[in-house]
Length: 289
Image (cartoon, rainbow, N blue to C red):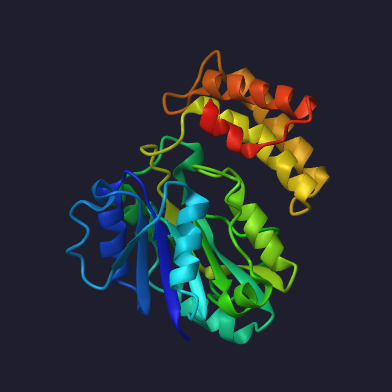
């Protein structure tokens, strides 16, 4: 089985370098590692790391991930990792075995043992320590069904991608809130989405390179509604998701976390709600905010 790791990156070369070096410790090595960046500054000090191919694309997570899909079209599996995701050493071995043992699985997502996305985040040393302290599971090949793949670590069976011409939606620009839900649920219509107990990792949740709060807040409202209209995200999930983020950002705006622009996010939420009420469900509008 030919496995390609694809990493889209922007503006975090030091973290990327640490992640790439860490991947060398996999018990089952990747057949190819593809890093898609926007400018040369994105990969400073990374090009000397052996076993990595570098490609470019215009800025935006969907564009970069589609570029990886095109470059890895002949692979059996493409594993998308965020540029701040650390894998346990057995990750690829478990992934390969799971794709072999579950021929109906079209999307796999690992088990995130710690997620810095909704917290201050972790540095590379903290992430490595969390992985080292993880006791793991008794059955490393256990799987459970999942609603969607989580974008920080999601693997696609490329035969299904090719057969159904699955692409990441480029109408979801920049950080592309919920692009992972959209693409994995569209792919999941043709098979199973499974979470792998033994493929474990830490999402560092590095804040550098993230979109501003105003834009993120807009996407938190408009993107779920757009996906519900599109049909890849149920209305029963989309409306509660948008409402939950509006309420959370408002309530926390008085005493925001140091790492979160809650007031900016809430303002973006309100801009998004006003556009939705006017029938203007256009995710690309964040580019004008």
